Length: 198
Image 1: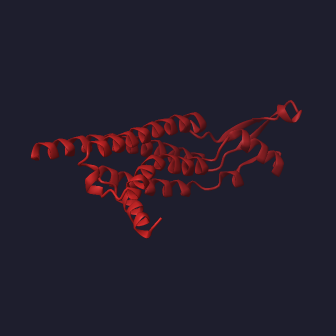
Image 2: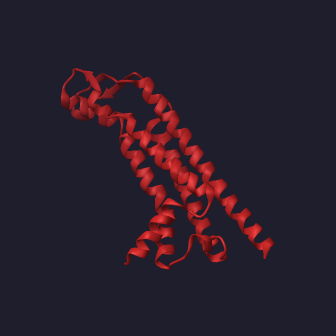
Image 3: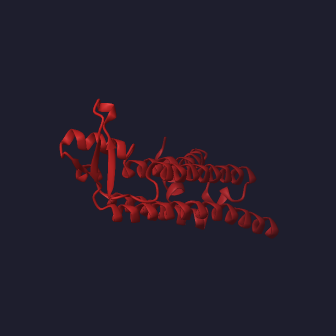
């Protein structure tokens, strides 16, 4: 693969052919950086009795996956359809302006956007299912699977801040879905303008 392919792929990913696509790329990247501020809550998760193995066991019950890992996976998975299209375009030496002029490229690009919207919806549903809308200050850990029949109370640090972060991430996910839908409409509008000018 020559450097020209790599350059075309990079330019396609960083600067999509539509204004909404460019805004989506910038917005989504900055949002995922925002998720890094969430912090490692497993380190500060404490239970009574405060023993490391009990804290880890209860934290694993509290969170099946940490929000940072989930948001990083979401970033990678949601960007795959667009990256795949731009890799294809780079390998075929398709110029970014040509994408919006040929019906086959428009169709494939819109399918990539629709796939990205589907992945965003799935990620949104998973976020709600995994994290809920509110982080409560106390979590009751069931130790039944360890052979002990009692419940342990655990303190969730900075629960209010975590609730704000969750709501912010839900809001950002909805905004990115709206940007994807707006990008489809922008493509259709630009295609119609191109056909009218012909």
